[in-house]
Amino acid sequence: MDRVRTADRLARAVLTGCAVLVALLIAAILLFVGSEGLLLFADVSPLEFFFSPVWNPPMGRFGALPFMAGSLAVTGIALLISAPLGLAGAIFMSKVAPGWMRHVLRQASNLFVGIPSVVYGYVGMTLLVPWVRNHLGGQGFGVLVAGIVLAVMVLPTIIGMSEDALQAVDAAIEEGSLGLGATRWQTIWNVTLPAARPRILAAIILAFARAFGETTAVQMVIGNSPVLVRSLTKGTATLTSQIIMEMGQTPPGSPWNRALFMMAFGLLVVSLLMILLVRWVSNRGVAR
Image 1: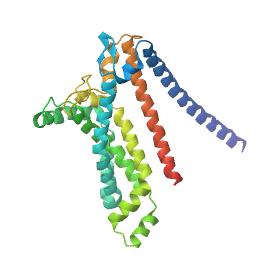
Image 2: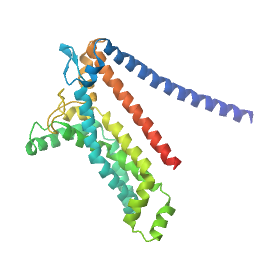
Image 3: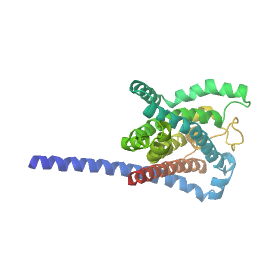
Image 4: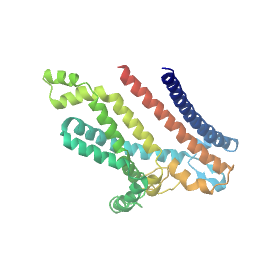
């Protein structure tokens, strides 16, 4: 018994230490990135950084509004495409498809998760950009192509989590609805989906966080122009694409470098907020 208790205490101490280490690492990253970024406001007004559309570091102009707008536009387009498609796919896989087909589709969906983002970007650059250029005008690079690429990238997240949410609904509730005379589709729409809504919302929020922080694929197809979004087919930039393009060429400690750190800090804050929102939505679902 003493050996068992000692082993339990050791395991608990190791797990607690790992959890504390992870928390300290996250706090250290936030502290480092945030401290570097906030130093920007000693040289640049917060109003200029958040609301100015002019990004011209050599001239001392550090308006990040084009990148924030670009990130929101790209992510919004991605969710407008992926959310309904992902939910429809999850409904088909969980409630309509036979078992063998569900297994095949689930494996195919999981396969998309393992594809490197640079491959998605290359496919978008070689197929979607020329198509948009030939049929919709412009240079082809822009938020439309970036949104489509991101939609494909986040589809597995929405499909997988939504399918799990639909499968977790108590079968007795659905059987009761069918027993009262509702059709299968009426049951899915009026019973199954409302019961699984919190977890489905959590899947969409996680997809938002995934799309908002994507870098390589977006950088390859968005055009990388530091201007406000004015057209779906014209180039712009996002927070992530601008950071990856300019971080390596900025002098450490300069306002330019600190502006990029501030953009990275904003991405971290958004990611943490999305995680907290997912936890809140999931706990609300459990409480019901």
